[in-house]
Length: 424
Ligand code: AMP
Ligand code: GLY
Image (tube, rainbow, N blue to C red):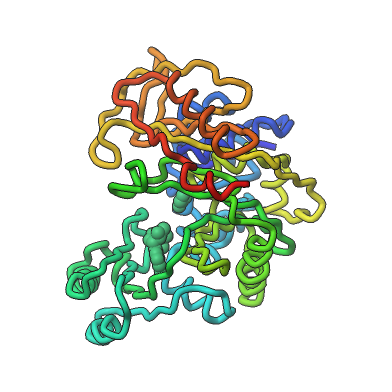
């Protein structure tokens, strides 16, 4: 079977690596891919959002399955577009993808299906003044979210009510986040530790895919601006059996059942961004895809045939698929470019020695040139190691990080430190 994987990050290299181990005799194409995915299949320069071009390519290359790595094609409706053309896509349809595409839709969905989340109200230009009155009823900090996709930047949290009012006004009246901010969700601030939990469904049955913690800030001790993710740990020590059972019973199952009732059974990977509020998981956000860098920490622990999983998502049969999770801990450290998440320079030549037996390198912003591999983005290379505990896994990844060379290399040396005390 020929497969087309969409995307170019570390997550997509992890997908491509798993697919290349699946014993599939067919070809794997990656659009647009990176220097890492090029080791697992053939990179092609196609825009994943140009559905007509993707369709033509699929016909030319006899591709029968598309696997989107990130949300953009899903939210734009690639599943619905391809369906009449007989090309299966391992992902949710556009209605189900709106769980990620619209925060207002996601909140209303959670209310309809009694899924625990922060209390909220939504506001538009019509009821802007009510938004200000609503803010006055809340205790700080205030959480304001642009409704639509805003490249991870559409959430503002502030202690200052005057600033909250100004942000609300800025989003709605001055289109601070473009049309993504036409509707603004204002919600209760949740106190607790954040965690990413994952599940996969074929529309009929589902499986949990474990937990991970994403380190979002650029600086050690969780300081400085937000990034795409500087590292990850999986599993998270406090996400024990009891906690994960609550995630399944209170969140994953009602989400899958709710979508089924609404006529759009979820087929794909569900990312539940949660707050652990004194042992009770509450939803901060849904994503309709795997996380990055969480995938780079979870997939090395996951024993499943990825081709069979992708086929099951699209065509059913997930209940028959053997699934196992490695009990070891994965620690992922992301190497980034100097200046990230601000302005960066690309094209720095890289030396990447072969990793040790417990370690995997997943390329993100890299490119293969005639003169070898060069940097090609802010987040460059995800390094994942598996070991008995967080401290050991992180130490191996940090050691591997020293062996990779390029000008401007930067990485956090404290990934997992906060969780070590929780691990017995
Ligand atoms: P989101 O894009 O919805 O994941 O929000 C970005 C970040 O803002 C999250 O990863 C949280 O760290 C934080 N956040 C969002 N909503 C809340 C909330 N209701 N309470 C506390 N923190 C939040
Ligand atoms: N790690 C957060 C995300 O993938 O959205």
